[in-house]
Image (cartoon, rainbow, N blue to C red):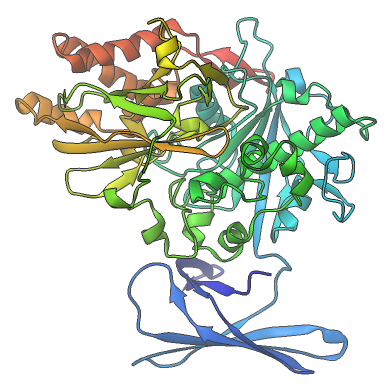
Length: 587
């Protein structure tokens, strides 16, 4: 129990038309929560009261009293809910009991033909593997049961669609193809507005083979590419080595049990991102025994095998508060952007990564690892910002293991950007990928003989993420990264100063109107896309490359266009026989 009570306000509407049945609808207005309610029980009723906290806006001090009565057999009647605010009249609502759950979700599942063999959905008995808590309650658990224990009723739609992925050239999925598949294939993709609906696809493999699951965030429909709704879809890659021993039968050994357990974990974890969950370490809870942690990250801090020996197949308490009592728009699919969960004990407005530079991680003493950001100091207006991130071993005579999955998508690094207006925002990538660490051991520099084995570098493309363009105004920007590595290793980078120039003429200023659009941003994030839904964005980049061929803006635009042309792009399409299949897109 989380010890809270919460609710949502809706405005009810009714329209009477001559000769027709009345049209009745409701509009969501806002959410509220009581953090420390007083509960008084009696033989015939329970009364819950406390101080109301609203998630958004400014309200007078408000209290609520909730009274639920029951008759013979403890059958509950409706709840009488009374709000009293300073300087306002009492408001009384009568609420009927409708469910045992806090939220209700509909999941639509698609399956690629190449992996359309049982099991499609996860099913695991928590006592199957010997590495588990000794007092763990024995029970079978699937996707629905995992969320039911968290207070979420999940209904998996029976009309499962099969995607024919037998095209000979099609080998693996890209993030761009997953986005396009959701927009084309998901029956609720363009239903409009936030909704308690989610889409999951069981696919073969991702273009990066180490990725076992992914939540893809940004929509490419609803008025233009990338303009909501968000947090709708996730994919599980059945051909990942994690699932080599997955059987459509109760496990007969530890390897089969481990595969079944990982299959369930991956489904629940990726769907958790769609509920707006960050990873545990991103919330400063690296030791959380939660679906949203990584077993290997926990074990690096607490000892080998400790995560599964302690994990009770649940979300942690703060996540349960978010699921059950969080602001509706921060939880529901298509609501607030991914990453706005933050610390849900405060309002989302305070949790959206609005940190002052001094509040970021500060290092004292000698760090074992240098985390260095480098780039040119000046970028032209609209020029996509790319920054080099370098990790270098500083430990004398000792090799240091690092995780080389350094794209923000994998969660090992967090990128903070202070904008010219003083706001500090955290870069939120378009996708979130689940993969085991790609470990590399760095030598110590003095023993390196100048060969560079003491360091590892990647290029970060930070122009566009799930919250839009991050460098869209002229002025001075500060960028900093924190790296969370194996073990209890948290290291901040230097603070990088970048200046974005002002438009040099009216043509550049006019270009911004076409350039700063989600369909352009998604092409930048995907390093080019052949999706017909993103064609307008690719056309803008093609025109930019032509008009500004002598500038870095034009050169970077040309690189994205070239990548889109060089890579085949597959799209889920419906053929004449009504079958959904992967086919080459023409753009």
